Image 1 (cartoon, rainbow, N blue to C red):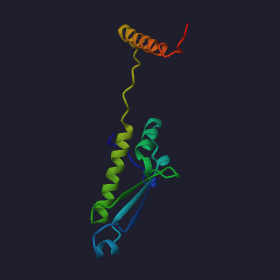
Image 2: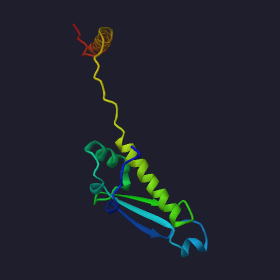
Image 3: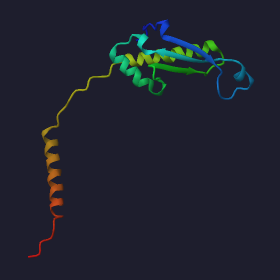
Image 4: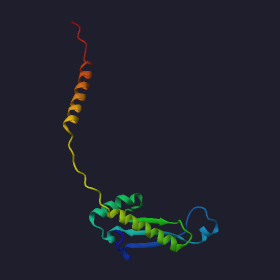
Length: 134
């Protein structure tokens, strides 16, 4: 579902300094982006809402926001685009519906094999009884 519109009031961006190696540039310039997305404001259908919560995992906050942090690139604009792309991928995945499971029943041969194995096990256990001295 690539044509899903994300309302602007559902997004909140903050630029932070990126962690890890990179020298002076990493310490001075806030190029990493932290994108917070309010799930309620996205207006997703119930099945997609459940799935996106599952997909978000540890990125989901207690306030029902998904937090995506992007710091792969050296510029704010590239990181901002990366975060939004990752959000779009997540929303598209949430809109994919799982195939319905069709309940099946075991066949006659499978039932017979199960009963035979139970009988065999039963006879093994019967042999473990107390010994009778007559």
